[in-house]
Length: 486
Image 1: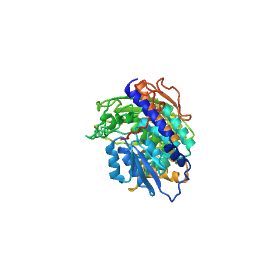
Image 2 (image 1 turned 90 degrees about the vertical axis):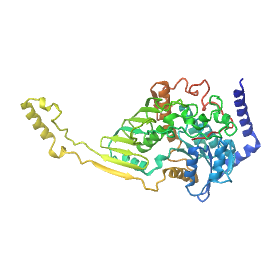
Image 3 (image 1 turned 90 degrees about the horizontal axis):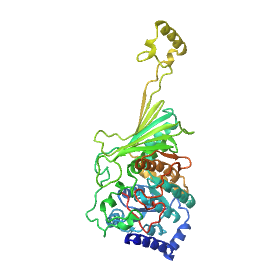
Image 4 (image 1 turned 135 degrees about the horizontal axis):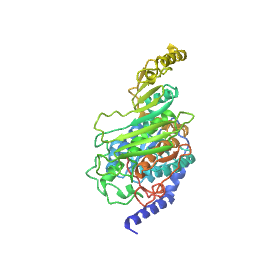
């Protein structure tokens, strides 16, 4: 047995031992007995993962009244020091997320780690009696979603998945317009999120003091494939399949979440992806250009439609990142801050002439055709309604990020599990993007049942981490580890 394997098993054993001790068991019992939070009490939060998004999430959470940050967890010592500077020297800081879960003064946790940690820390937090805000995507693999849903249902705790755009004013207005039938029956949706810069392509800055002493590399890896210390993998984890979910899990997830929210759909039945690694070829094994096609079936909420998603990190042209929902009577085009509704209905009469077969008829047949046409289509049926364009701009003080947390905290206070993005919604949004990755890497069409949330053609390796012989994070326990979400 190699030393890395021994270290990992030793970590798992140590974790099990710690959980079994009185010092941990007692706080867990206290947590289970906590009363519902009074509307007048502060909600005390802790953030697990103080990278880029962890800081933004924490700031957004604190923009809500009566919310207090009491603890943070991270694996890079510089970020723990930064957190104390940014949020107060009184903060409890740790590299072990279990110490956060064992604290009776923590009501809710923000899980802002790399994707391969989401399901494990979420399940542990729910079992510890904590309310959970988990960043998107909720899980890294298709076979992990139901375990999170089950843990959430059993816990009775509030859980929100973090794709905050759906809490914006423009997304809510788009939802209202679609429900009102302003564009008729949906038939096609397209959405894109292009970029053309190094930071946008996740080549984040690496601190010069990143060493095995300042970064807990083994804890970061958990049960991912063992590798020598590599600060690029730690600080740019989105670039690697072992820890992230690529452009699909980082960006498609926002697009799909928005479409699901606006249209009340449950998800697609067929997913196919193509793309390549076109420009940012160093230090990554996920594509920087990807297009995915999804087939959504007819439901009580909508007609069948096709959705096409695109991400291009090498787009040197004009970038206009919007979602466009197209119906038979109009189009809604929206981003997080604005929306344009264009209503355009065809006249009842189809017309004739121009590039049409009418001119190929004989003169007598043309006369007969016109007589029948005039009888069938009176003048009022031959003119289309004028094209209408309605613009909506979100209020300048619209804060979708803080509002998304506000929905979470409001449900925490009343003991409700009914958040706008609960784990069922979160998994139905995550599953298609995870299917995008499976389709891309395995070059196949993925068939999905959005009602039962099960895959119809699971990969033979779906229970293993991509590219390895090791079990995926959803099937192998981790030690006392936690990582940072950038």
